Image 1 (tube, rainbow, N blue to C red):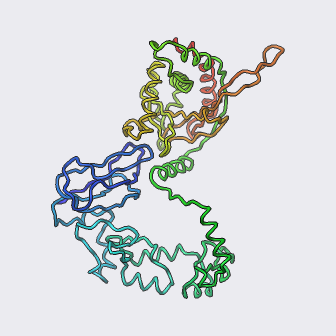
Image 2: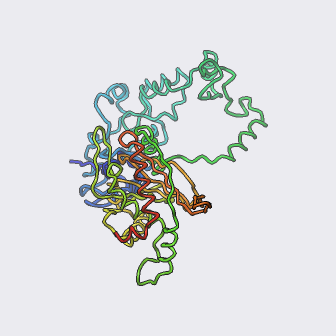
Image 3: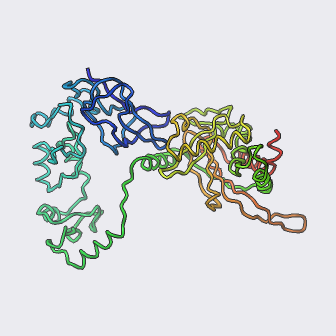
Length: 452
């Protein structure tokens, strides 16, 4: 009996993964544990392995697809076995209406991979007769319609959905569009965006487009690079939007005297190799100060889920890492118990693993508080976006001279900027401000903090 290969669940907050590349083709023999494909979350690339020995009978998703976790992506078994029951989203009720009208078009053989956008392996578009007739009556080009029937076949409800999403047209514009040679914009100049005849755009010069207009269009097209949002970038986009839509985010800005940070960093850099401190950076010092300050402010070292707040005794400190393939947030475990050298070493190890795409999924989950540093890029103030279910995130800015009253004189003292975003659903402004006050004191006295 064929067995399913599923998209694994990688952490509590990962809901979907992007299937990057198939390592095995349909018909290949596989052994249990063989890598079937690579998948990508917003944090890491992982390998999906075969759950059994056998033959790869079917692939239910193509490279580039965004696949929900725990969904079947492939079937493993013996040649000739039926895999239709393992196909995700396949039900008798869905297949019945159109399958009855054209039973020969439903291919349940296990040797063919799933079809995307209704395109069959022969290049012919798989569409039921009822769906084709409806599209022709309405003058709808179904070549770009994604099918939801068996094997990606376009069925009547897919055409109905495409018609519902099509711009509203005036009767004359609709008749002209049905004749061919024109395309309708998403919004017209008529009442409530109705597309009028004057809004229709000719497809090419043979339909009346002037040479000058065609050349202008081609020049503009050459100046635009269209990049499809896929993979980790797409997942990050969805996560950031969900964060802002589901939390009440408030950012507080402050600064801390940076003279002790700069002096200590200079001493570490000039110290002997035997101390192992030459590579310690100001970012490492801030990580240490955050880890030592948070235990006195447990409301910020917490998760908010539904109607409960979980406050953590130890600090699982997430640190944002900029990589060529997107933002990653590895976690320094029990950072409040680590020395400065241990924090510095672990931070560099995790950053390198992210850059090289070899960070383990477990190293990207379980954070209770996150720090992101844009100071090295010259940013003076910004609004960090929360990483739910965490309730706070600290943004670190650059170091600038700030005028400070010194008796009757004014001294210009270097200060490091701090931007704290909190979830105002569970954290009020005053507790956030008190955390920033204590953090600023600890940063100003970082040499004393090391002795605690």
